[in-house]
Image: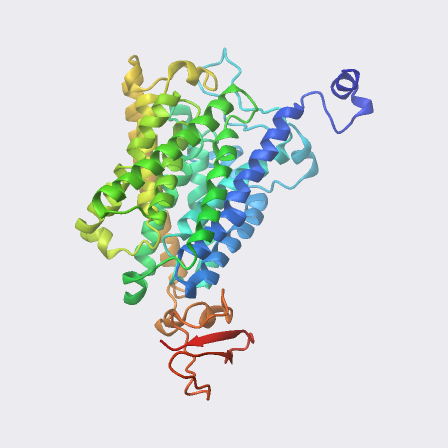
Length: 489
């Protein structure tokens, strides 16, 4: 006990522990940041590498890896303060570096977060830990948004175009949504609820992904018709990291290790489990058997749906949200997609529109219906409630609709402009001869030392002959020197 008192009261003995620092909050926020980071690296890297055809495993993993690194550098150089700094426009902050020692060691603060019209309430967002913790925590959200978006354009986007797209989309699209809803922009002050990113992350990535898929163009016909996972067990490992990391995703949203964070973590897992079970049940009813890929999609829709209201709805409501997130996106993917000519035309490789845009929109609207007044009081300074609780709840639901329309419109327009600009200098889509081969043509590297899925090696042409049922180890004709096995069936 004496040691604790010294740590918090005698500053000259502990210069690294200023009086405003809460060690518990800081420890939890850094843990939550790490959990969200693990969702991307290695979670989505593994998931993407294994859920695609073998010939696209390296490309898919590398797109996620590159985005994670590029977003971090852009974030600290410019974008953090565009999203959480001083106001430049009602929907955009002033960009500036977040690298100075004094800035990062000072107490975290979101300067535009004090709700206007509530002068008697000191509600400015000012967590009890240093700015460095908040900068990194919010970076992990920005990174995963770009990586989720990438799922729409896997299997054909030119990697050079992707390398240009990531920083431009972060600057001109993500920061707008983040500032508007979280950083003190006009939607934040209007009272729109987005607890942990149903709109900022999931609706944005789903709509931007669909838009990007339209401009980039489709995969080869053979890839669209048959795109099986190359490793289902590894896909489940990536999905597991994603699910477990979501406790930090939603549990870190209150910026403190408080009781609302506990509710958010429980609701997150309840909704995800319910959604997975509902999706799997629908697969069994309509297709006669469960699908592991379908179960992962159901998990994803549940996680995306609960995100905008994780700490604001009761746990029974999380089950309701899970039931709807396991069924409505299922219908949009399995039924409406096949009947809508636009969705048929646009090649959304991993169905990010359904698993994130539809689920994120659904969660935002359900939050406008199910947000519980007493839970809202835990983190909001004014009377907020969902429509089911009467009072001003109907107005809250309308606000959620308007905010969704803004996010959708901004992402369609900004993503289109960015890609049309890049197209002036770099082709958005790989040439067909590279698309036929995949990773080996694009990178000179392969995920597995096995022949198939488009590789051009011909054993008869290169002098390696086998009997009808024999196996023979053959040297690779490519510069990487990998060896493979040719099997004649």
